[in-house]
Amino acid sequence: MLSVRGLTKIFGGFAAVSNVSFDVREGEILGLIGPNGSGKSTTFSCIAGLHAPTEGSITFQGRNITGLAANRICQAGIGRTFQIPRPFGKLTVLENVALAAWFGQDRNVDRETCWRQAVEALDLVGLPTGPATTTEGMGAAALKKLELARALASQPRLLLADESLNGLDPSEMDQAASMLDMIRREKGITVVWVEHIMGVLMRVVDRVVVLDHGEVIYDGDPAGAQRDRNVIAVYLGRDAAMEFAP
Image (cartoon, rainbow, N blue to C red; front, side, top):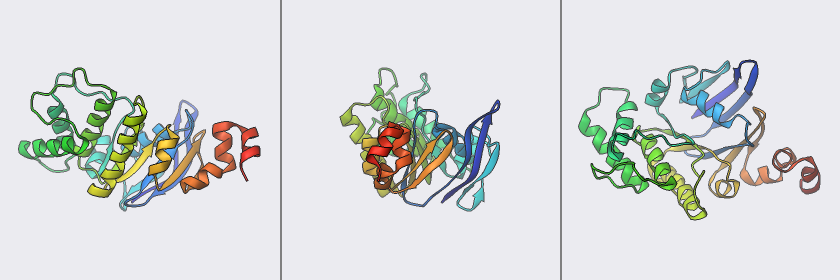
């Protein structure tokens, strides 16, 4: 479904991502993991159109989308959440999501359709759909759900979920992970999930790609990643890798 080849992004001489290549298969949940500064969010931003790659190519469903603007990539069928939700404070919850529904269309769309898609997305994540509900006073879990609803309202075929568990308590983490799995199963949306909370992510994903210093060091099943010497070294140090890895 998505093919990333030789992706490189350089900021002022620093290579945040260097020659990254991986594929995303239709219908899977792929975990994109790695320590802080490993290039995960930069990779997301290049795929979603926030940053233009310095080198490399990105192909989505057979179409080269490398360097396209964010709105065109969204309209092509790729939705994205962000680590820090930033809803429009002067809009209601429903208006926030309806605006995302309008943004994600690659054709003229009427207001009624945007409202209907917004209500469907809010229902899916379990947020109120009343026209007067505001974002004021929303907690971390509700804001994460709103961020997800906005991405879903854009009608994606591929969802890039960035740090969906950050700031949540253990119960909310389990709910968020289950929600991503439900979205994959019930809506048929393929998911690429960047996350630091490994214990939850590993229970849900079908495959993981591990980045370190902007490069891919592992691409395979989650159980194999937990036994891989390079992955253990990145998270726990070389001594731990020598002791625990086969």
